[in-house]
Length: 87
Image (cartoon, rainbow, N blue to C red; front, side, top):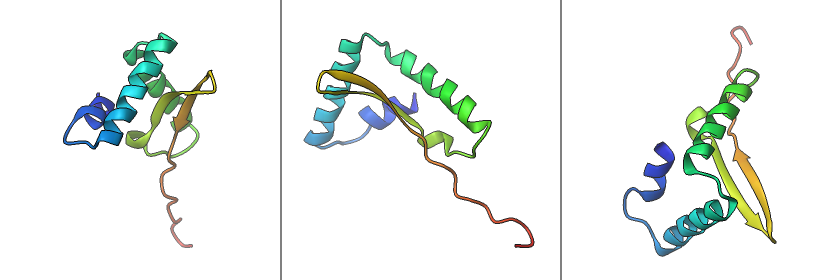
């Protein structure tokens, strides 16, 4: 749900509104339910977090349409590296 708050909450500019509309249209064309992307995001976080420290709340999953080709795009920020004790 946090993604929906980010997209629709607060005052936004015309460019951001256009971006949200484009996002909705791409999802409609791809025939993917909005809840499906949230489920995919959760699954990806579970798998990646087993191997790497990531910033879970900043993971973004989107569908982009470029030149008639649809792509599932995932942005996974890594958590800042921690210094080892005694280093």
